[in-house]
Image (cartoon, rainbow, N blue to C red):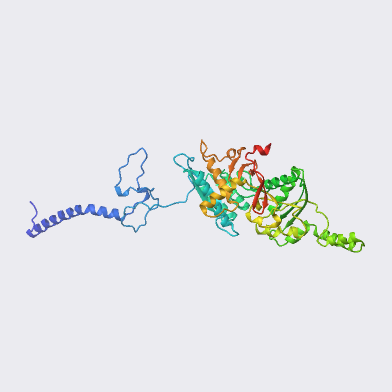
Length: 488
C-alpha cells in the first residue's frame, strides 16, 4: 500500500519537477554562450597554434587571419579580451646591401658612370668642378647614347668627401668612376674602387696615386717638360736652369727636367725654388741670376776703369754705367713652370735682375696655356708644351656655344674621360672597362689630341710646342696624330 501523501505535498512535488526541467533547458540554452565567453577570456598560448607539416593539408583559416608574417612566439598580454584581425603592415624602406645587377645592355639596364668632382669647397675648386661637370655632360650628349647614365657626386674637395661619394656610387651600381681631381681625394676614393675591382680615371697630375686600376687622364709635368726641353735642345739650347715652386709640383718638374736633359743630350745647369705663396720671389730670382757676385764684379770693374787713364778706359766705363751686373750666366734657357697671377709677378723679375730674356729663352709647361700670358713682355718669345691647338679650339668653341663662356683649362679632361667611358661602353660584347681596353696601345683621340695610358696608369700625350707672341700663340711644332710618330 502506497504511503499517504497530503494533497499539498503532491502539489509541491509537481511544482519542483517543473522547475527542474525548466532549469535544465535554460542551462542547455546558455551553455554555448558560456563556452564562447570562456574562450574570449582565455588567451591562446604559442603551443595552441597548430603546426602544419608541408605534406599535411591544413584547414583553411578564416580570411581575416591570413597574415603574411610569421606567427609570434610571445603570448599577448593577459589583459587582452578581443583578438582583432591585424592589418597588413605599411611599406617600409630598409637600407640593405646593393643587389646584384645584370650586366649593362641586358634587360634594359643602362651603363652607370660615376663622376667625382669638387662641386663645393674653397679656393675656386667648386667653380672648376662645375665647369668639368658641364664638359662631362657635353660629352654625354655628343657620344653617350641612350644607355649611358651619368651619376655626378660632390667630393667637397676633401678626401673624406671623395671616399663617401665613391662608396655611394659603388652602392648604386657604378661600373667605372671618373675623377676625382685632387691627389688626396684620388687616394681616398681609390681605396673604395679597388676593393670592388672598379677602374678609376682620375684628373690628378700626381703620378704617385696612379696604378692598380687608377688611371690619370691629366697633363703630367714629365711629358710637358720632356717635350719643351727636347725642342729647345734640338735648337742648340742645351744648358737649362729650373726655377720652380717649392712644392710637390715643383719637385716633379725638377725630376722631369733631370731625365729630359739626359735624354736629349743637354745639361741641368742650375735649379732654384721659391715659396708657392710668392713671398720670396726676389731672393730666388737673385740666386738664379747670381746677382750678388755679378753685381760685385761690375762694381770692381768700374773701380778699375776709373783708376785707369786713357780714352779707352773712359769709354768702357761709360758703357758699364748702363749695366747692373757683369758676367755671363751659366745657362741659355730657364724652365719656369708657373701660371696665373704668380707667373705675372715672377716673369718681370728675371730681366729686372739681369736675366735678359732676349738672350735667355724662357720655357714653360701647360700652365702657360692662358691667353693672358701674352700681355707680359718678359714672356714674349717663350716656348711651352701644350695640347693640339686645333682639337683644343674645337672643344673650347663648342663649350662656349652651349654654356656661354670659355671653359677653364682642365675642363677638357672631364670631356675626354666621359667620351672614353662612352666609347668603351659601346663594345660589341657589352661595356669593357678592363685594363686591356683602357690601356689600348693605339690610344684615343680626345679634345686635347691623342693620348694613351702607360703600364703605370699615367696618360701619355702627343704634345705640341707653342711660342708666345703679342697676338697669341704660334705653333712651333705640331702635335703628332699617332703614337707611331713618337716611337719612330
